[in-house]
Amino acid sequence: MPERSKTVHDVIVVGARCAGATVAMLLARRGYRVICVDQALFPKDAVSTHMLRQSGLARLRDWGLLDRLKATGCTPIHSITMSYADAHFSGFSDPIDGIAETYAPRRFVLDALLQDAAREAGVDLREGVTVTDLVRDGEFVTGIVGRDRDGEPVTEHARLVIGADGYASTVAQLTGAQKYDVIPGETFTAYSYWSGLTMQSQLRIGDKQAVGGWPTHDGKTLIWCVQYVDRFAPFRADVEGNFALAFKETAPDLAELLDTGEREERFYIARYPENFYRESHGPGWALVGDAGYHKDPFTGLGISDAFTYADLLAERVHEGLSAARPLDEALAEYQAQRDRSSKPMYRFTCDSSRLVLPDKHVEVMRALPGSATHTQQWFRMMAGGLSGREFFAEDNLASLLNPQGGR
Image 1 (cartoon, helix red, strand yellow):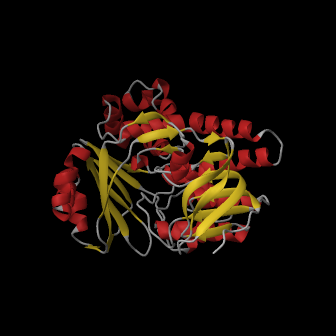
Image 2 (tube, helix red, strand yellow):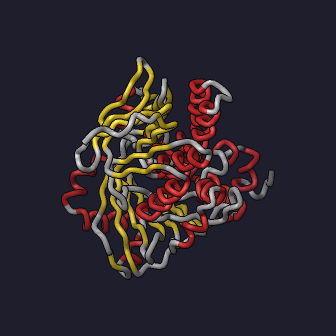
Image 3 (cartoon, one colour):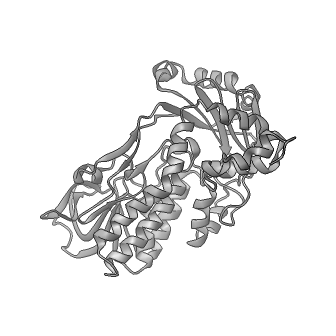
């Protein structure tokens, strides 16, 4: 079979999940000719926290997709219970970007929703296409080379190739994109889905492990545990027993709750890769999503960040392709803006994922049940709507830690 035509498209996006389908959709809505390819055949699940924070939901609303998500029957989340050592409290953030709840959709539902929206915008979305190389004109990337689901060769050309193909990105490897600000991953997760439970979001941190869960689709609840990688091998020797033990040790009340429900699916186990940023632009190429910036899923910000920076990249690509400014300059600004805005939560996430909180954090958590205002602020910070610097400012915490003295 001959290769596909030599038509030069505006953009090729490699990867059709949260970041890839989104940036493809946004560019197609601006009138660009976009191909989006993925080696998977959908619907296909993905290892994920499932969590969509308010910032991500606000973008779905602005793109006209939030009502579609709500119509899928995903249970809204409006309460979080958290514990660490002897600190135990519940609450929720005040509205962020006008959104007063969160959702944790199954990925085969969310990804399909985004892919449908991309196709509706005019994206040529092709499943089962594996990229094996890039087309180059000198130092410039000008397309992709690969094979389709039948093993037939595929070659496509474009003014820009965007890698949205995950933390092990093929596009990143082929361009030689270097990592920086790397922080090793220290934990792994195991999770499954229970029926028969009625619970909102739970996050319980114990001795070098954490457990929790939140509702998702079809009346099911995602139940998970996280432990250090040195426990990975013994954990796998008895997944069900060690999973139950983690709950008994960390949150006995949740362990009792799980006994009232029924596990509906197998356990999913994944070691978390390192945290990093990557060089995310070069001659004729860019990276978005986990391909360009990956952090531990502990704070559940990955999907929302994928939306945020896909949106930002689409804006900068439009500036470059429309000749409003040089494309390389626009892409460089995209990376710089992404790094500046994401760095505080990157640091907070990496620190929190070690499951050993600073003494100051513990002191604050013990005091939170006495202040609804500060509890709300805490969860706003966890959702990325308030910086740690603002929350932990001495003036802000004075009335919490010294209620008799006031501010």
